[in-house]
Image 1 (cartoon, protein in one colour):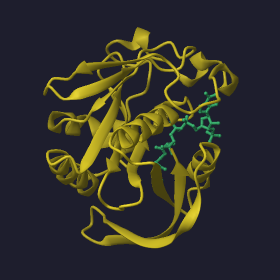
Image 2: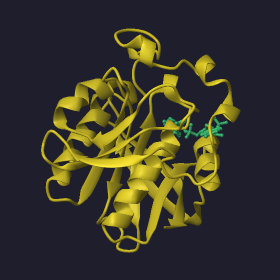
Image 3: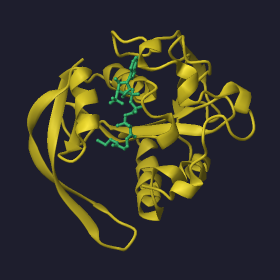
Image 4: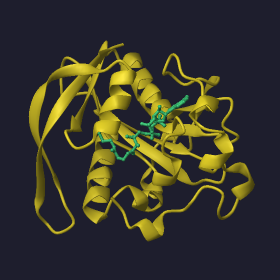
Amino acid sequence: MGDPDQHQQPGSGEGADDLPGHGDVGGGDALQHGSHGPEGSAVRRPGRSGRLRGVIRAVESLPVRLTVRDLEPEDLPGLSWSGGPAHLRVVAESWQRTLSEEVVLLCVEAGNGQLVACGGLDLVKEPQAGELWMLSVHEAWQSLGVGTLLIGALEQEAAVRGHRRVQLSVEDDNPRAAALYRRLGYRPAGRREESWPLDDGTLHRTTTTVLRRQL
Ligand SMILES: CC(C)(COP(=O)(O)OP(=O)(O)OC[C@H]1O[C@@H](n2cnc3c(N)ncnc32)[C@H](O)[C@@H]1OP(=O)(O)O)[C@@H](O)C(=O)NCCC(=O)NCCS
């Protein structure tokens, strides 16, 4: 994870009046559960690059407008909270794959332009299912429904591109994320070895559980 000192707290900085702190949400009950798709109205509009983006008004009770849109290269500096240089290089390389539409990368932007979440959908890794990966919500914005919103948007992208199933993988030491995925309908579909680069030049090797969901 990134340097905690770089974490920009909701409610601080420019546009702070638009931003919720955890206290503003009034506890988990204030957020609506149910279908885990985006719970606000969804509008399609062209983005800066002309590619369509989903503009999604988030959960009614969250007093901030969140926009789900394509990640662009100029967004990378605003994602330093999501990981170190090695992680950001992977994101940058993944962005290259959006050009051939093998991959969709989405981010969630708050009203003041702060990026609060990002995640990817790999459309070709598995023939059977779209693969969600690199899901990350800014620490100060977790447990507000942002991850649920992002996952719903990525699932929508998978469905639009013809996938009838989606999957993701989770490490054994991340039970909270696993519980969220289970709650969203994901079910175990096997185990696999994975690795990704760390900032010290080594590879983090791990065994993950693959979770799958029918769209
Ligand atoms: C895992 C992760 C992506 C989930 O995103 P998130 O925004 O925190 O997830 P959500 O807020 O949608 O849901 C999680 C929590 O909010 C609660 N919640 C979400 N929407 C809610 C709603 N509408 N009403 C009430 N509660 C809600 C859930 O009950 C859940 O509770 P918990 O904190 O006790 O687990 C995020 O926490 C994260 O980035 N973690 C660090 C990196 C990571 O682990 N990535 C995943 C790797 S597989």
